[in-house]
Image (tube, rainbow, N blue to C red; front, side):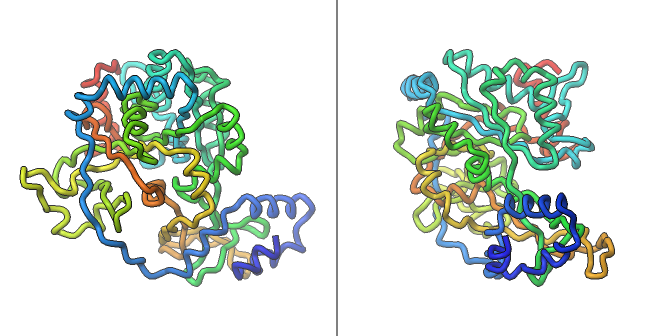
Length: 402
């Protein structure tokens, strides 16, 4: 433990170690051993790293998919029936912004009946299970804060009809918080200030939880990763899986055509010849408004956080350092006098890795277009755009009784 802290210049974090009792020492050691300290390497690159040279990337369009649907379905159903596909639900977030004191997936989207976000997603996956006649292993990433509540919720609702033996829960790794000088902070004498390391840490968290062995024993070759907050998310979609396998690409990404040039979505493109995602705030005016001869936006396809990755490739890139995003936050901490401080202004950094950065670590990615009103209903806000309100409208449109 001390050697690792010394490697990152963080020895001060155990200055109270000698004052702790046996249980306190064990707790601190356990916290540090389970923490992703590699994110601290991001401190050495504080200046914004220059992005590469961007080029537009088209997509396998809805019309093209329809014309080859039978072929894709045969390939995808074959992969599913042979147990080659697993699903990973990223569910570490809390529902705070939605006025919910609990995991975001426990949000009730129903009006006259109870219909939970987790339930909607599981029911979507069950449709595939019924169609292919085989269970799809489901891996649910939680956080330290919501792990117990999430597991209890699934158990209480009998996994919403899913086979509980096919569901595995694992906890997202935590990352330390630092002050602006790069020093880790203490919450209490035996507790380091920490926060989840971002959704880009999902595979390393699976490996740490011992689930790589589970994947290999089941013969899983592909993982479909998806976000909890999109209530229309189509998971383990056989046509998407079949199209990605047929294309020969290492990965696949579901995308929707942008609603307008200024829509706040990340866009799948090429960066220095490799697949990448450029965030809306990184795009120049020229990139946002550039159009193809037929009038379509050149940077037209926004990602919806539904990706397909090859397990073999994930293993190869697992030890590569992903880009670390440093976010200024208000972090409660204990000062040198032992006083608890709750800052009014941002006083330090939280560190995050993002799943979208994993796309640029792939040699190829199939851009697969889906219908927005059939597969994209994110719930990020209480009202307005991308809200519970708008998601309910789209659920009704898709024939779901609320």
